Amino acid sequence: MQAIIEDKAKEPGFTNSVVFNLVMRRNPDLCKGVVEAALGFELSKISYIETEKTIQPKLTSRNVRLDVVAKADGKMIDIEMQVAYEPSLARRARYYESAMDTDALKSGIPYHELPESYVIFFCKDAPFGKGCAERRFAMMDALHPTEKMALDDGRTVVVLSAGNWAEAESPSLSRLLKYIHTGNVDDGSDDLTSRLENAVRELREDEDNMGYMTLAEQLEILERTADEQLAEKDEQIGRGQSIKELAARLISEGRGEEFVEAASDEAAMERLLNDGE
Image (cartoon, rainbow, N blue to C red; front, top):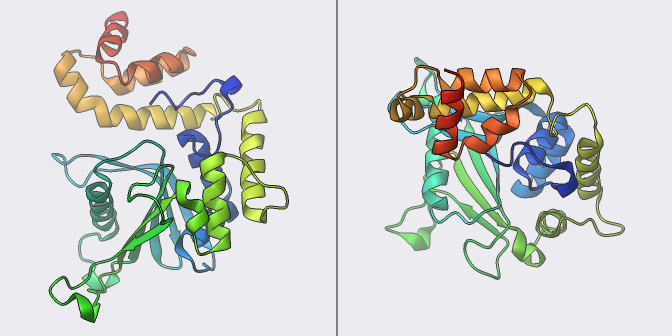
């Protein structure tokens, strides 16, 4: 949560969660280019982009907050920027895909209308070791591996290792992974990484943004975070004022950064709730 509001002096780059989400959402053409480089095929257009999308399959289930969800050519695509090491990456991908399926298939819709889904992880480290920049996972017949028979259920998980950018077979993917790994655009680099860096710089230089977000965007993200923590935190702390109401109040008072800092600190959150009583 502390990455939600950044000090401009730190100049967060494309891998910063807020910068990544805003660049993708505000620039559908760049989002399309990133997805095409990751998947290795062209898309006609991106028809829908949502960032920080929260899905809760049922009340007792764990919430899922997806970085960037896009719809293109009848496909659902989740794009995740994974900066920190994630030991449960595979199980996380499984849960993300299942949550997207639940969200997509409404009551009464037949199974054959469930769209193809892709979960893409851009990892700054190399979760599967050195020597491979790209891994693609789909459901295969484990009993007869030599036949290489796929279940063809429409699900694909793509894990991209930025640290192994030099091993990528596609030049466009290699340049994108190198940009993610180093934060630098080479002289004469391809149009995609140059445009991504320009979008990042414009975002940092935009004085109308409040911590790289408009007030409405900042409040939206804080309220989503509050919704996720509401039941658990309110029960633990035992306060009548909800976390969501606290977020809205602090934002209106120009104290949104205090909420962000307290979101991962139970004692600090309790103090803020006490202040409001």
